[in-house]
Image (cartoon, rainbow, N blue to C red; front, side, top):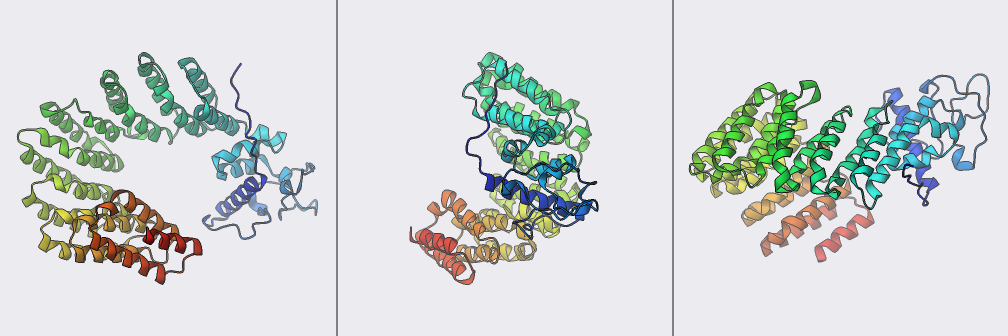
Length: 481
């Protein structure tokens, strides 16, 4: 007998119907070629256009309660009665399910037998995910059984992703002698999931550092061999494999040899793969400092990475520029200013959609420059800051504010003002998220006067923005703490 997960007892019909309303509007908008970011224009009524798909079924089907009888305006020429949920063709129900939150699939699948049958694989995916999350203990047999259930999903293989992503972290439940073989089986199963399998495999590779020292080397060799075998169509895992160089047992000449080997992989990768690997190799630069000739080698490899950035298409440079800025402290002090100027020049030439990742780190690098250059360099970043897309401004603002702890009072105050003004007129939760992040990691290290200046800027933000009462109260309470 297979273990079964019972349906949740806290079924909320209003929540599910609201999700269905949103899903219907998303389906209609996608088919009409409209963006789906806005809310449905008529929330109380579920409407689908006549073009949504085929002639409706003639099945009348009694509706069970008003929540199950949303009125549609796509009645056919053969009848003038409103079309109910029960008349929707199977392909429309599938599209609704695709737009629903994953946790609502179990509720939707129980609406009627037709929906249950039509969403059989989605429900299986949901059930497997529940079992992976909530099973108290899992041995190898139960994990293999659940993996077999997941792989029964054939019509839409991408539906394997959610339960597989929930299951593989449970490998740590197994005895150590079973973990290597189980890791390999789960990794190969993730490789059979279209598109979404690659991120799962990357996460699995990065998790190797959490295994016992005895298992890390064979797991590393397994991941390395897999990376060598992959075709371009499968996507590259070299960046994830390179991250394993952080293992404390790898150092000295061996560290540099493996670092060089990863550099040698760059020419064979596509632009996205190169960018990912360059970000990881930049993070690994401090590991070269263990060597006797650390400074010379760090300068050499930093220069090589910067040259590779210039070979990338501008559409893939942002994250690498940001990480090079974040690691500029690893260079000897006399080399930092010239490399920073190169990074700033590259940033100003980025397309708008790449600026967020670069500007999240570039301002923080100001602190390692000579004091007399900091204000001037900040002013040179202003054209790029102004071009940051609205959806990236939270990261740019955070980058500006994170740099304040190591700068003088005047520049710190200027950065608080500039960072918060970036958030003017945006989602009011953005400023709350930024301050929460700052409060956890940076504000405790601000000198007292700089924190007073920061509070003045936060108060000015509250006064010039039309915030909700809750957001205003939360910000004012934050200032009083």
